[in-house]
Structure formats: C-alpha cells, structure tokens
Length: 190
Length: 285
Ligand SMILES: Cc1cc2nc3c(=O)[nH]c(=O)nc-3n(C[C@H](O)[C@H](O)[C@H](O)COP(=O)(O)OP(=O)(O)OC[C@H]3O[C@@H](n4cnc5c(N)ncnc54)[C@H](O)[C@@H]3O)c2cc1C
Ligand code: FES
Ligand code: FES
Image (cartoon, rainbow over all chains, first blue to last red; front, side, top):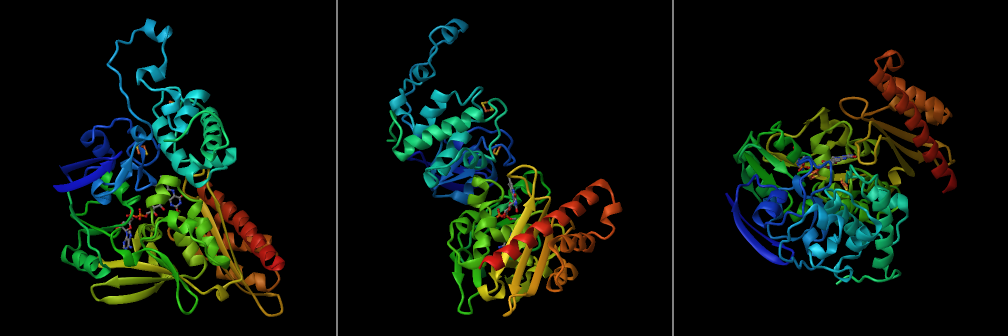
C-alpha cells in the first residue's frame, strides 16, 4: 500500500491505495468523481482524459502513485457544480420541459466555453465520450487558440466517439476557440 | 496487474542500485504508456517498479560543447515537440509532435520508445536514421551504444537488467544538411506501418556526399539500407533508390505474402518521397 495525495479540482484527497490503482480509479472511486469515464482501459478511447499539472493525460494509463502530489483537473472542475435535489425523471418530464442545464442548476454563463459550445452545437448524443473530448480540446485550444478544422480533428485523434460522427464536435471546438480567443460572444471563462 | 513495489529514486545512480538489488524482476518505468498496457494484460510481471520520472538529470534537451544534441531519455514527446531546435535537429520535434495522440505525448518518453523496441515506433527508426548514439548507465558503469546496435529483436534491447538508458545523442548539425522523415499509418494515432528516415550531406561542390537511409516497421528491428543510400551519390534517381531500398530491406518482397508485399511497396514509395524531399531541401538552401 502507498499513501497518495492529489489535489483534485482544488480539493486535497489523500488515501492509502494499492500501488496498482490507476489514476482513473483514484478519481472515480477515491475522489468520488464519476464524470471521468472508463471506456477501454487501454489508452485507446480517450474517455478518461483529465489534466495533471496542466497537461492532459489518459488517466487509465497512469498509475496514481506516478503523479503523487499533483494538481488534477477533471471535467467537474471546469465549471461550478451546483447540483440540485434529485428529481424524478419520467418520459414526460424528458419529452416536455427537459433542459439539461436545469438538471445541474447551471446556466450557460457558468459553463466553460467548451461546455457551452458542446451544448449549443449539439456535440454529444449519448455523452459517454464528452468528458474526454472536452478535456483534450481544452488542453489543445489553450495552446493553439486559432486552429483550422483539420487541426481540431488531429487534436482529438485519440478520442473515439461512436455517436456523433465528430462533425458537431469539431463545430463546437471551432466555436469555443473563438470564445476562448476573446473573439466570440456570450460566455466567459471563470 | 500483478502486485509490485513502487520505488521512486531521484538520481540515476539510485535507480541503477534499485534495479540491481531487485534484479532480474525489477523494471524501470518512465511515462508508463507502453509498460502499463503490458502490466494490465500481465505480459509484464515485474516485482518492483523503479520510476524514472523524478530524476531531473534524465529530462531535458541541451546542446553539448561539440554541437551534438543531448536528449534526456525521460524527456516526454510533448516537451520535445515544443522545443525550438536549430536545423535538422528540429525534425526531432516534428516527429515527436506527430505520433500517438496529445495525452499520450504528454507522458510518453523518447527513452521509453527506444527501450520498448517496438519495430513500429518512430523514435528508434529516427535515431538510427540520423546516426544517433545512446548513453547507458548501469551497475558496472557507463557505456555508449550506437542506436542501430540497441534493439536486438522486437521488444529486446542491449540493456542489461540493471542498466538504464540515460540519453539519446544526436550528432552535431554539421553531420547532415537535411533530414527527411516519412511514415505511413492508417489513422493519425496508429503506429506507423513503415517509416523512413533519409539523412543527407552535400559535398563542397554541391553533389551528394553522404546519405543514410533507415527503415522502421518492415523488419523486427529498424534497419539501414546502405547499398540503396550509396546509389544517390552515384546519381541514381529517388525512385531507383526507393526500389533498391525495398529489395535491400525485404529481399524477395515482391513475391512474398500480402503483408510483405504491402510493406515492400510502402518502403519503395516512402523512400522515394523522403529522398525527393531531402534533395529539394538541400537544393533550396
Ligand atoms: C494510444 C497509443 C498510441 C501510440 N502511438 C504511437 C505512434 O503513433 N508512434 C510511436 O512511435 N509510438 C506510439 N505509441 C508508443 C509510445 O511511443 C510509447 O508508449 C512511449 O514512448 C513509451 O514511453 P514511456 O516513457 O511511456 O515508457 P514506459 O511505458 O514507461 O516504458 C516502456 C519500456 O521501456 C522501459 N524503459 C523506459 N524508459 C527507460 C529507460 N530510460 N531506461 C531503461 N528502460 C526504460 C520500461 O522498463 C518498459 O519496459 C503509442 C502509445 C499509445 C499508448
Ligand atoms: S479508458 Fe482511458 S483511453 Fe479509454
Ligand atoms: S456522444 Fe456517444 S460516444 Fe460520443
């Protein structure tokens, strides 16, 4: 066993863990943040992407002990989490007034430009790949603020999406890039 | 994964001592991008993992007094891709920035790629192609190994159980006038099926004085194609060099199985492309 401390989205989490614990498992099971998804466990799908000391990594291919002491940012860390009381979801509430942002008591202004753009551009269907897509694109756009569509496609080469066909994801990235450059409208990064 | 003990030394000497103490079942781990996959499917079952990522002397890029470029073995692709390197040394940054994917490049290291000795990885072929030297530290002292003598088979290197690779040394800029790297893969983040490095130096009269060709992916370890490379100085065309290189690396490749014929064809095309690019580079300088 090994004692590991990580600062996850600003919160310090310390635990005695088995050396074999993957960073992905630490984030989901020890820190209790399940926004980071496990899609393949073999560094292929990118659903588990998170930031470690500012660099995006596939958390299923990193041991928690390897990054002991690091600052970790997960998808939950991108915008304030204001979870409302759990509501009964029925087909009717879904068909009627379903507003995804209501469910987390959030508004577009609170979201990271990428999250807002994914929302606006309908860049997700089942949403399983989304946390990884957003984390990789955040890392990419911070370094390359003015990409072309081909650049974006290359940047997410290690992220698989089985639903969207990538078109809307690229749309969202282009829109978010504009906002992040300060050229676009509405949303702001906090 | 099988259970292991985690060790995190902060010097190369410390790491070597730990590997020696726990040999033969201790393993070094740098970024873990290849090793973790092997641990997960239990094809690697080390009892001790010795982490190299806390050893400062193993990371970073610097130019030595003689002009050679000393790249720490535990330097990540991401750091290499961002490095501003002069002349053909810059091709190292280009190669590092155009393999795997962003998250993997943030953790994977050049030394990890060489020590995995996967025939399809880019860095081993590139290192052989430019005539790089490797520095190794072990319990019985330090030694230097030429990149082309390092891989002894797919997944097998010249490293002893208590040795680590400390640096990859690219020759000084004067060694080559230009270096061209070409590879073919189906999807952006797939490892290359075949890669080709062409390094070229001109004589004072502007003719080709020396050419070095290395081909990765086609054989269990990347190889050079000296006979094909020598043709260039004799005035052969890029296409002729390509055809010759394909036959040299995969003799009888045109009549082999499908996979061999495919690679033979890839070598032919990629060598022609690399040589063309190298020639046009030196002619426009
Ligand atoms: C999704 C994915 C896509 C990839 N695509 C590509 C690609 O397109 N092209 C390509 O070239 N590669 C590709 N790779 C492979 C990548 O290049 C390697 O995984 C990476 O460079 C290994 O470096 P590492 O630091 O993570 O090594 P580790 O996984 O830590 O180590 C690998 C092996 O080398 C040994 N080792 C590491 N460093 C040293 C050292 N200094 N001294 C002695 N032994 C050492 C370890 O003991 C282990 O056996 C890909 C990998 C993944 C996961
Ligand atoms: S779960 Fe990590 S890449 Fe698929
Ligand atoms: S939205 Fe379903 S996998 Fe991408």
